[in-house]
Image 1 (cartoon, rainbow, N blue to C red):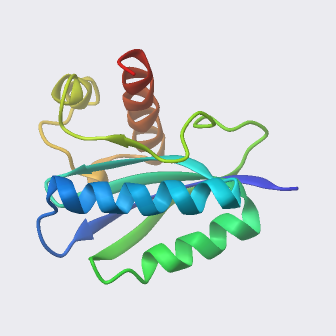
Image 2 (cartoon, rainbow, N blue to C red; image 1 turned 30 degrees about the vertical axis):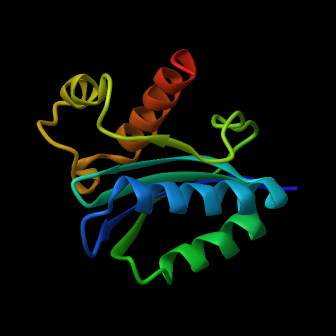
Length: 139
C-alpha cells in the first residue's frame, strides 16, 4: 500500500466557534478511525492548516470531500508526499489551536500571525509536528 502525507490550508468563510471545531473534530475522528487515516488540524484567524496521512486512495477521497465542504474555500494543497512512516500515527485527528506555545512557535518560524499561505510546505509540516508534540506532552 502506498502511504501518503497531504498538507493543505484553507480559509473559513466565517469565524469558527469552539463548538464548530469540536464538531469537525468529532466527525473527523470517527471517519478517520474507520479509514485508517491520521493527521493534525490547526485553526486560527479563519485559517485551517491540516495534514492527512494514510493510504493514497483513501486520503485522496477524503481530501475531495473536505475540499467540497461549504464552510471554507481557497483550499490549497501545499505538499503531497509518499511516506514510509506516519508522523501523526497517534492522532485520528489531533487539534492545535492558539493556546499554549502557539505564538512562540509562530515566532520561531518568523511569523507574527498564523498565515499558512505564507508558510513553506516544510514550515507547515514542522509547525503541525511541533504542535502535535506539545499536545502529546500535555495529554
